[in-house]
Length: 247
Ligand code: ATP
Ligand code: MG
Image (cartoon, rainbow, N blue to C red; front, side, top):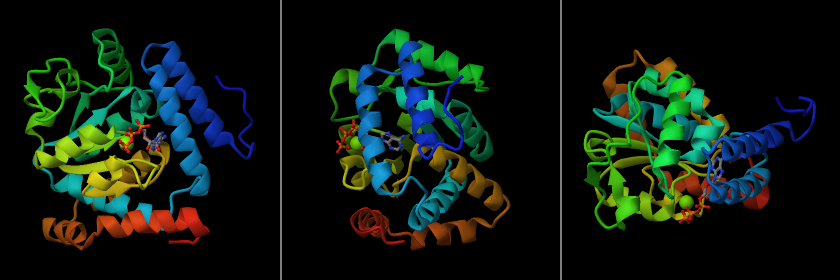
Protein backbone atom coordinates (compact mmCIF):
# COMPACT_ATOMS: atom_id res chain seq x y z
CA UNK A 1 0.00 0.00 0.00
CA UNK A 2 2.95 2.31 0.47
CA UNK A 3 5.59 2.86 -2.15
CA UNK A 4 8.71 3.04 -0.01
CA UNK A 5 11.47 0.43 -0.34
CA UNK A 6 12.32 -1.26 2.98
CA UNK A 7 15.97 -0.40 2.45
CA UNK A 8 15.16 3.31 2.62
CA UNK A 9 16.98 4.79 5.64
CA UNK A 10 13.77 6.47 6.79
CA UNK A 11 11.51 3.52 5.98
CA UNK A 12 9.84 3.28 9.38
CA UNK A 13 9.28 7.01 9.63
CA UNK A 14 7.76 7.21 6.15
CA UNK A 15 5.51 4.23 6.81
CA UNK A 16 4.32 5.85 10.04
CA UNK A 17 3.56 9.09 8.25
CA UNK A 18 1.63 7.20 5.61
CA UNK A 19 -0.48 5.42 8.22
CA UNK A 20 -1.38 8.72 9.88
CA UNK A 21 -2.34 10.22 6.51
CA UNK A 22 -4.56 7.21 5.84
CA UNK A 23 -6.07 7.61 9.30
CA UNK A 24 -7.05 11.16 8.45
CA UNK A 25 -8.55 10.04 5.14
CA UNK A 26 -10.61 7.35 6.89
CA UNK A 27 -11.92 9.77 9.51
CA UNK A 28 -10.05 8.02 12.32
CA UNK A 29 -7.31 10.57 12.97
CA UNK A 30 -7.92 14.30 13.45
CA UNK A 31 -5.96 16.99 11.65
CA UNK A 32 -4.40 17.91 15.01
CA UNK A 33 -3.17 14.32 15.01
CA UNK A 34 -0.93 15.22 12.07
CA UNK A 35 0.70 17.93 14.15
CA UNK A 36 1.21 15.59 17.10
CA UNK A 37 2.84 13.12 14.71
CA UNK A 38 5.28 15.77 13.46
CA UNK A 39 6.22 16.62 17.00
CA UNK A 40 6.81 12.98 17.77
CA UNK A 41 8.97 12.46 14.68
CA UNK A 42 11.34 15.24 15.70
CA UNK A 43 11.97 13.59 19.07
CA UNK A 44 12.28 10.16 17.50
CA UNK A 45 14.95 11.49 15.16
CA UNK A 46 16.90 12.83 18.13
CA UNK A 47 16.58 9.51 19.96
CA UNK A 48 18.07 7.68 16.96
CA UNK A 49 14.72 6.13 15.93
CA UNK A 50 15.28 3.12 18.15
CA UNK A 51 14.15 1.81 21.50
CA UNK A 52 16.87 3.04 23.84
CA UNK A 53 17.97 0.58 26.58
CA UNK A 54 16.23 2.52 29.35
CA UNK A 55 12.94 2.53 27.37
CA UNK A 56 13.25 -1.23 26.94
CA UNK A 57 13.64 -1.61 30.72
CA UNK A 58 10.61 0.65 31.27
CA UNK A 59 8.60 -1.40 28.77
CA UNK A 60 9.34 -4.52 30.79
CA UNK A 61 8.12 -2.71 33.93
CA UNK A 62 5.00 -1.61 32.04
CA UNK A 63 4.32 -5.24 31.13
CA UNK A 64 4.73 -6.28 34.77
CA UNK A 65 2.43 -3.46 35.90
CA UNK A 66 -0.26 -4.52 33.41
CA UNK A 67 0.01 -8.20 34.41
CA UNK A 68 -0.37 -7.28 38.09
CA UNK A 69 -3.33 -4.94 37.51
CA UNK A 70 -6.85 -5.84 38.64
CA UNK A 71 -8.54 -3.70 35.99
CA UNK A 72 -6.11 -2.60 33.30
CA UNK A 73 -7.40 -0.41 30.46
CA UNK A 74 -5.63 0.55 27.23
CA UNK A 75 -6.71 3.97 25.99
CA UNK A 76 -6.87 4.51 22.23
CA UNK A 77 -7.03 7.81 20.34
CA UNK A 78 -6.99 8.62 16.62
CA UNK A 79 -3.20 8.41 16.21
CA UNK A 80 -2.99 5.15 18.15
CA UNK A 81 -5.80 3.61 16.09
CA UNK A 82 -4.09 4.61 12.83
CA UNK A 83 -0.62 3.41 13.86
CA UNK A 84 -1.04 0.24 15.93
CA UNK A 85 -4.64 -1.08 15.93
CA UNK A 86 -3.79 -4.80 15.73
CA UNK A 87 -0.86 -4.43 18.13
CA UNK A 88 -3.10 -2.81 20.77
CA UNK A 89 -5.66 -5.62 20.44
CA UNK A 90 -2.88 -8.17 20.83
CA UNK A 91 -1.52 -6.49 23.97
CA UNK A 92 -5.03 -6.31 25.43
CA UNK A 93 -5.41 -10.06 24.89
CA UNK A 94 -2.03 -10.94 26.42
CA UNK A 95 -2.50 -8.87 29.61
CA UNK A 96 -6.29 -9.28 29.71
CA UNK A 97 -7.08 -5.55 29.51
CA UNK A 98 -10.05 -3.59 28.22
CA UNK A 99 -9.72 -1.18 25.31
CA UNK A 100 -11.36 2.25 25.56
CA UNK A 101 -11.53 4.91 22.88
CA UNK A 102 -10.73 8.34 24.22
CA UNK A 103 -10.47 11.44 22.08
CA UNK A 104 -9.17 14.93 22.71
CA UNK A 105 -11.57 16.22 20.08
CA UNK A 106 -14.49 13.93 20.69
CA UNK A 107 -17.09 13.48 17.96
CA UNK A 108 -19.58 10.63 17.80
CA UNK A 109 -18.55 9.92 14.23
CA UNK A 110 -14.85 9.57 15.02
CA UNK A 111 -15.55 7.52 18.17
CA UNK A 112 -17.57 5.07 16.08
CA UNK A 113 -15.07 4.96 13.21
CA UNK A 114 -12.27 4.10 15.64
CA UNK A 115 -14.32 1.44 17.44
CA UNK A 116 -15.17 -0.17 14.07
CA UNK A 117 -11.52 0.00 12.99
CA UNK A 118 -10.44 -1.76 16.21
CA UNK A 119 -13.09 -4.44 15.74
CA UNK A 120 -11.76 -4.96 12.19
CA UNK A 121 -8.43 -5.66 13.86
CA UNK A 122 -9.84 -8.29 16.19
CA UNK A 123 -11.20 -6.39 19.21
CA UNK A 124 -14.39 -7.97 20.54
CA UNK A 125 -15.40 -5.22 22.94
CA UNK A 126 -14.50 -1.55 22.63
CA UNK A 127 -15.38 0.84 25.45
CA UNK A 128 -15.70 4.62 25.46
CA UNK A 129 -19.03 5.15 23.72
CA UNK A 130 -21.18 4.85 26.86
CA UNK A 131 -19.39 7.79 28.51
CA UNK A 132 -21.36 7.46 31.76
CA UNK A 133 -18.62 8.77 34.07
CA UNK A 134 -16.33 11.80 34.28
CA UNK A 135 -12.71 12.52 35.17
CA UNK A 136 -12.78 15.26 37.84
CA UNK A 137 -11.15 18.58 36.98
CA UNK A 138 -11.52 18.53 33.19
CA UNK A 139 -14.01 20.33 30.99
CA UNK A 140 -17.09 18.40 29.92
CA UNK A 141 -16.06 16.77 26.61
CA UNK A 142 -12.52 15.88 27.71
CA UNK A 143 -13.76 14.38 30.99
CA UNK A 144 -15.96 11.68 29.44
CA UNK A 145 -15.06 8.05 30.21
CA UNK A 146 -16.88 4.75 30.76
CA UNK A 147 -17.81 3.96 34.37
CA UNK A 148 -16.70 0.34 33.97
CA UNK A 149 -13.66 1.30 31.84
CA UNK A 150 -11.09 4.01 32.56
CA UNK A 151 -13.12 5.33 35.51
CA UNK A 152 -12.83 2.00 37.35
CA UNK A 153 -9.33 1.10 36.13
CA UNK A 154 -6.33 0.78 38.45
CA UNK A 155 -3.75 0.83 35.65
CA UNK A 156 -4.20 2.77 32.41
CA UNK A 157 -1.96 2.74 29.35
CA UNK A 158 -2.27 6.17 27.77
CA UNK A 159 -0.28 6.57 24.58
CA UNK A 160 0.14 10.10 23.18
CA UNK A 161 -2.15 11.56 25.81
CA UNK A 162 -2.58 15.29 26.26
CA UNK A 163 -0.97 16.71 29.37
CA UNK A 164 -4.16 17.86 31.12
CA UNK A 165 -5.83 14.50 30.94
CA UNK A 166 -2.69 12.63 31.93
CA UNK A 167 -2.38 14.86 35.00
CA UNK A 168 -6.07 14.55 35.89
CA UNK A 169 -5.93 10.73 35.64
CA UNK A 170 -2.86 10.65 37.89
CA UNK A 171 -4.71 12.84 40.41
CA UNK A 172 -7.56 10.28 40.39
CA UNK A 173 -5.00 7.78 41.65
CA UNK A 174 -4.61 5.81 38.43
CA UNK A 175 -1.25 4.24 37.83
CA UNK A 176 -0.42 5.56 34.38
CA UNK A 177 1.83 4.07 31.74
CA UNK A 178 2.43 6.87 29.21
CA UNK A 179 3.98 6.41 25.77
CA UNK A 180 5.38 9.75 24.62
CA UNK A 181 8.51 10.53 22.64
CA UNK A 182 8.90 13.88 24.42
CA UNK A 183 10.51 13.25 27.83
CA UNK A 184 9.64 16.81 28.87
CA UNK A 185 5.92 16.61 28.10
CA UNK A 186 3.54 16.94 31.01
CA UNK A 187 2.09 13.54 30.09
CA UNK A 188 5.46 11.84 30.50
CA UNK A 189 6.01 13.68 33.78
CA UNK A 190 2.62 12.55 35.15
CA UNK A 191 3.38 8.89 34.44
CA UNK A 192 4.22 6.20 36.97
CA UNK A 193 5.89 4.46 34.02
CA UNK A 194 6.93 6.80 31.19
CA UNK A 195 7.92 5.10 27.94
CA UNK A 196 9.97 7.50 25.83
CA UNK A 197 9.70 5.52 22.62
CA UNK A 198 7.73 5.45 19.39
CA UNK A 199 4.38 3.73 19.91
CA UNK A 200 5.02 1.53 16.88
CA UNK A 201 8.04 0.01 18.67
CA UNK A 202 6.79 0.32 22.25
CA UNK A 203 3.51 -1.62 22.05
CA UNK A 204 4.89 -4.83 20.43
CA UNK A 205 7.80 -4.70 22.89
CA UNK A 206 5.49 -4.49 25.92
CA UNK A 207 3.59 -7.48 24.52
CA UNK A 208 6.83 -9.44 24.06
CA UNK A 209 7.85 -8.73 27.67
CA UNK A 210 4.36 -9.61 28.93
CA UNK A 211 4.50 -12.98 27.14
CA UNK A 212 7.91 -13.69 28.70
CA UNK A 213 6.67 -12.85 32.21
CA UNK A 214 3.17 -14.34 31.93
CA UNK A 215 4.00 -17.22 34.29
CA UNK A 216 6.25 -15.29 36.66
CA UNK A 217 5.50 -15.01 40.38
CA UNK A 218 3.53 -11.90 41.38
CA UNK A 219 6.31 -11.25 43.92
CA UNK A 220 8.92 -11.02 41.14
CA UNK A 221 6.71 -8.73 39.10
CA UNK A 222 6.12 -6.48 42.11
CA UNK A 223 9.85 -6.22 42.73
CA UNK A 224 10.29 -5.12 39.14
CA UNK A 225 7.67 -2.40 39.51
CA UNK A 226 9.01 -1.17 42.86
CA UNK A 227 12.61 -0.88 41.71
CA UNK A 228 11.63 1.36 38.80
CA UNK A 229 12.35 5.10 38.99
CA UNK A 230 10.35 7.19 36.48
CA UNK A 231 12.51 10.31 36.81
CA UNK A 232 15.61 8.26 36.02
CA UNK A 233 13.95 6.94 32.85
CA UNK A 234 13.13 10.51 31.76
CA UNK A 235 16.68 11.66 32.54
CA UNK A 236 18.13 8.76 30.50
CA UNK A 237 16.02 9.76 27.48
CA UNK A 238 17.01 13.39 27.83
CA UNK A 239 20.67 12.44 28.03
CA UNK A 240 20.33 10.36 24.88
CA UNK A 241 18.77 13.35 23.10
CA UNK A 242 21.46 15.75 24.31
CA UNK A 243 24.63 13.66 23.84
CA UNK A 244 23.56 10.57 21.88
CA UNK A 245 24.75 8.56 24.91
CA UNK A 246 23.60 4.99 25.25
CA UNK A 247 21.68 5.60 28.47
P1 ATP B 1 1.93 18.22 27.05
O1 ATP B 1 1.93 16.78 27.42
O2 ATP B 1 3.26 18.86 27.41
O3 ATP B 1 0.74 18.94 27.58
P2 ATP B 1 0.60 17.92 24.59
O4 ATP B 1 0.04 16.69 25.15
O5 ATP B 1 -0.27 19.09 24.44
O6 ATP B 1 1.86 18.32 25.47
P3 ATP B 1 0.53 16.95 21.93
O7 ATP B 1 1.27 17.44 20.74
O8 ATP B 1 -0.93 17.06 22.01
O9 ATP B 1 1.25 17.61 23.18
O10 ATP B 1 0.86 15.44 22.22
C1 ATP B 1 1.45 14.66 21.33
C2 ATP B 1 2.61 13.99 22.04
O11 ATP B 1 2.71 12.69 21.49
C3 ATP B 1 3.92 14.72 21.79
O12 ATP B 1 4.66 14.82 22.98
C4 ATP B 1 4.66 13.79 20.79
O13 ATP B 1 6.05 13.78 21.03
C5 ATP B 1 4.05 12.45 21.11
N1 ATP B 1 4.00 11.54 19.94
C6 ATP B 1 3.55 11.81 18.69
N2 ATP B 1 3.64 10.74 17.88
C7 ATP B 1 4.15 9.74 18.65
C8 ATP B 1 4.47 8.37 18.40
N3 ATP B 1 4.31 7.82 17.19
N4 ATP B 1 4.95 7.64 19.42
C9 ATP B 1 5.14 8.20 20.65
N5 ATP B 1 4.86 9.47 20.95
C10 ATP B 1 4.37 10.25 19.97
MG1 MG C 1 1.50 15.29 25.98
